[in-house]
Length: 140
Image (cartoon, rainbow, N blue to C red; front, side, top):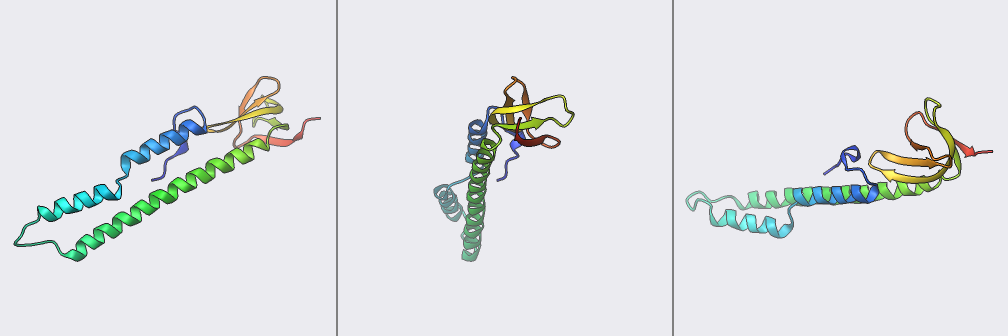
């Protein structure tokens, strides 16, 4: 399941990760639950027209593919969060100018939010690092 980070609650990477985890818990089913459902289906099938065994195998294979896709998405989310943290740390001490030129200064700290990296400048101003923002070497 892919979660759009712009829809996550504000509060940084930890809150976003918690929101993603809770959403995935609500939409995933573990193998035990799937097997219980499969057994219940087998017990309640029409004895005069039983379900073909290959259909059960097909259902299990489909479930397995979905479960693997969910695991892959979780790992990708973790990787992207780690990459954002690494890149954000490299911004400290750099000079930044907003797209319209109204905010500029040296980056003192960076906080990850659901909208992207939020830079706090040495002059107290705050700027979302995104399209249109210019970042240069350390200020002179």
